[in-house]
Amino acid sequence: MQTAKDRSDNLAITTEVNSDPQSGAIENQNNKLLVKKFLTVISIFTLVCLLTLGLNLLNAAVSEGVRSYVSAEGLWAKFQKEAVYHLMEYSF
Image (cartoon, rainbow, N blue to C red; front, top):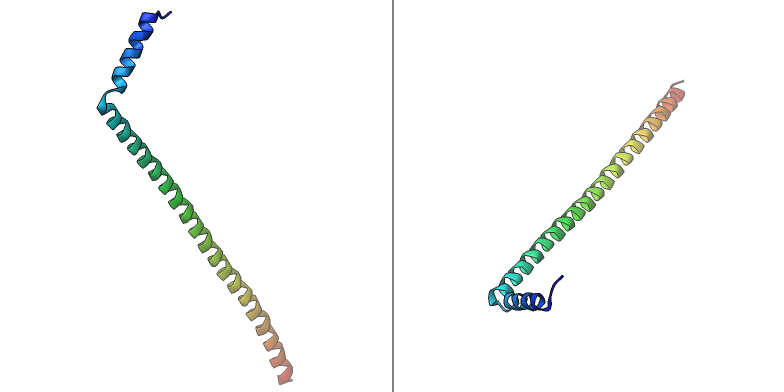
């Protein structure tokens, strides 16, 4: 159990540490480093989100193009078959 003298000694040590002018500079430097790390993490996260969005848009464009191509190929085959039918009908 701490006595009053121990508590006063701890208070004096704490006061001495906090009154050091370099401790404020070190704390300020640590805060700047923490902010820099935080901004780096946020920047990387934002970059990954934008990259994912871009890839999703590219995926949608490619899918739409493939879907259109397959649809047009089906129509081409259908009308080619119909054209052959009408040519056969015309020739007889």
